[in-house]
Length: 325
Image 1 (cartoon, rainbow, N blue to C red):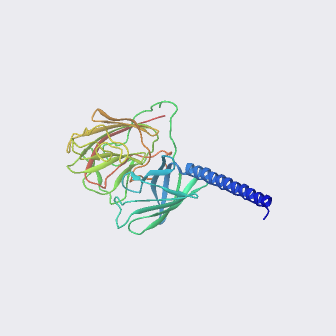
Image 2 (image 1 turned 135 degrees about the vertical axis):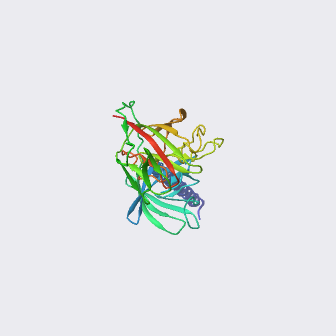
Image 3 (image 1 turned 90 degrees about the vertical axis):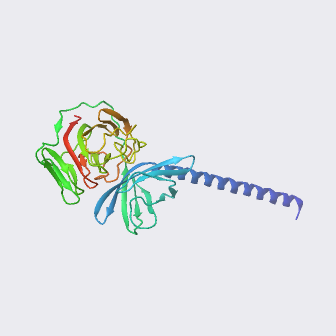
């Protein structure tokens, strides 16, 4: 081949090669931009509803970006506490993660598969016992308040005589009023107020037996733990006065079993303040999502006060709520 044509051919090949490289780089960049955009759609907090054979059951997920490209998170199943997710695998609008079992029965792990839809998520959840259910999710509301609450008149939720204004759900109802005390002498049903509230101040007086366990659910979705926790225990979100799985108190300020104690709880949006026996142990901390055992995952809606009665003996007497207007 003539040198002139050989040089021309080499030059053309170089140009074509360079063009191909540029095109590949541009496509790679476009793919990276799309992947980042898809990630952005997944990142955030999600209120999940699981369809368990026709029964809607609440769940919750938070996805965060760790570093430049790794997605991590936290997950709350229909029971138990918030669990860390070490990696959320995500590609082409679909994601999955696997976590070890907590209170679930069966062998193996819990696996969640999902995909980003128009304004939400949907997918399947597979439990260690082999069962699998479909679920859908919507973005959790931020619930930020722009003005301070104006408080209404206090309401006595318990009349000291009977269960008027309350309903038992779950197992057999064991709740009764004995000498003016709302009593659950053994594990059984949970107790839910018929009235629902948004922002409020709640005063509750309670007494538990040695080794017992209960809880006060705010709006029916966020549990403040009542438990016979040792006073010298390191504060934890799953111990006395913690918001279960999310917020640890500054200290365990419990008086112990068989003594009357008080919670004074203020909930405004997601911000909660908890005063235990006159001592503030949580100050305007954000509750990220629902806790295990929640009635539903509709966080933006009003909800009831609900007492856990399926974990052991518990008693209540004064129950006063002051709602925001």
